[in-house]
Structures are given as structure tokens and as C-alpha cells.
Image: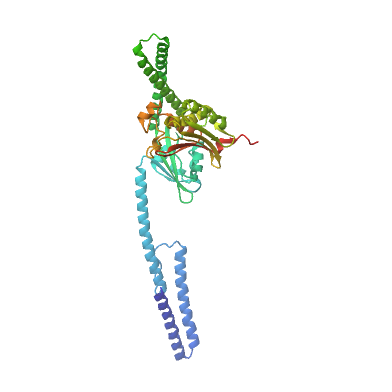
Length: 433
């Protein structure tokens, strides 16, 4: 650019010098210089006007041709135009490939602009959500009016959260799973999956487990009754005492398993957040501590640390089941004489109930799977202690219904701590007025 400026300056000096020489020779040097400079300035302004009109008209066509510095500027703009055109073509080709690839996906993809307005979606999303080509630019919540989705979309900026399951708009027979990913300033992607088949399979599994468990209760009750009668009558042969005792123990274990399965089925099928009782935490923990001491039979040192008088809004029986499961598990897996602490504390994040035992601990590789049904770290030891393998699964479902979470920390050989975290909106201080 410096060379171009020097060249234009040299051209100006040459014109001025030529006009001066002509003026001296003709005796009208001032007039000659003035006319020469006026012609040069007019030419510059004319080139400027052509270039300016080309710019304000949207730079349609090639830049106006000229010579000198304006020609060089025009050549630069022409090269920029060509480069921009090539990049634009590459971008369009890339967008077409992206659109073609997303159009082939079974999952629906919706791109949202500011304020949740529809920017683009693939055919699968249009089919699942009932979107039409003319809906672009409108808020997605105008077409997906489920209150759960509206809250889910608004809370999406708070961080990562679990996908939302809901019926398809206008078709309750289809079940959709939606997941929102935010990026940039206010943009977001909504991934939509049709999980109708999975939902039906899961419902069939739940119905099967619930029905089988319900049908097993009657024969187990009959067997337990006859075994109890035989043992109490004293008429059973002497050699039958040990088999009768073992049958009674296994019948009791099966009855406990069936009861846990029925409880899980009820927790899965009933509505979440259905409980509206105000449960006093201090009384609940005291009751659980008494049950744990009775179950321990004096073999463990069980202490209680309850900070503050607090109530939890929820279902009293379900909360008792979750608290008691953790406490009784601590008794089962702690050695005789080992300390067990039940603790309740409240902070700005909510309420936290923790059970710390002095057991053998849990290897970190097992912790993510502890809430799965029938998952056992040590299957043999769990069966000996009378566990069904469903306790932590029940705890997980109770917490889901109370918008709470479970965290587990453990060091092999040094014990474990299981903590239930309840959100602040579920709590209320009994000392407040």
C-alpha cells in the first residue's frame, strides 16, 4: 500500500511539474497550475463517486475499473470478492452436507435462536413435534405447551440436567425424550428422541414384576403359616426341626423381597411429588435410630447428631423407608462394636441426612452401580445379612419423588458415608413464625 501511495504522489508531482513548466513557457503559470490541479481533483472525485455508488448499491458486479491508486483499490476489492465468493460457496456446501446428514437422523434436532425462537429443524423433529415450514421464527413453546417442558427449557441455562420425558404434542400415544444443550449467547439445540418402544417395554417390565410379586404373596403367606404352625405344634419329627427353620427363614426372605418389589413398583408408577405431609426430621431420625439399635441388638455404637428443628415436605412412609434403609444397611455391614453415626445438617443448599458406618468400605468402581436392582458388591455376604439387593434402589426412587439426590463416599477398609441431599424448597424450619 505504501508503494501505491508513493506512486500516486509521484503522479501528482509529475502533473504539477508539467503544469508549472507549461505555465512558465506560456506566461500563465498560475492559471496553468490551477487548471491542472482542478482536472486532477475532478478525476479523483469522479473515481471516488463511481466507487462510492458501487459500494452503496450493494457491490453488485465487479468493482469499477480505473488506473492509478483507484485501479489498485478496485483490483483488491475484486480479489476480496472472489475469495469471499469461494468461501461462501464452501460454507453453503458445508451447510448442505450438515443438513443432509441431519435429515437422515432418526433423532429430531431443533436449533433455537434468542428467546427460544425456532431457527431450523430437521424432518424428524418436524414429524415428532408437529412443526411446519412456516413456523420458523416463532417460540418453540408455542408448539410444545407441556408445562414440564417450559420449565425445563427455562432452567436449562442453570447447567446440565437429565433429559425430559413427555408425551408428543397432539399424540399421547408417543413418548418423547427431549434434551436441551445451550451454546453461545442465547442459542440452544434441542435433541428429540422417540422412546415409545422403550417406554412400553419398561412398562411391561414394571407390570410383570408387580403382577408376579402380587401373585407370590398369597402362596408365601400360606407356606409361612403352615411352617409356623408345624414349629409351634411340637408334633414335627425331631429331624425336621432344622429343615423347618431353614424353610421359615427363606420364606421370610422371599416375603421381604416381594414386599420390596411391590414397593418399587408403586414408587415407579405413582406420581412424583405426590406427598404433601410435613415430616419432622428430628422425630423421623429418632425413630430410625431406635429401629437401628433394636436391629443391632447392642452390637454397635449408634449416635445421632440432629442440627436444627426442620420439616421436610413429602411422603412420611417413603421418607422413613429411605432413612431406615441407610441406617439398617450400616448395621448389617459394620463389624460388632463399630460406631455408626446418623447426622442431619442444614445449610444454604438445603438439608442433608448422612449415615456413616465403620464397615469394610466399598471400592470406587462399584459406587456408580449401587442403586441398581439386585446389584451387590459381595453377593454372599449380602445374602447372609438378609438383604434383598433392592434397598438402595428404593432409596433412589424415593429421592426422585422428593427432588433429592444421593451421594456416596467410601474408602475400602475405613467405612462409608451415604448422604441424602434435600433441596431448600422442600424444607421448613419449625422454629420460624
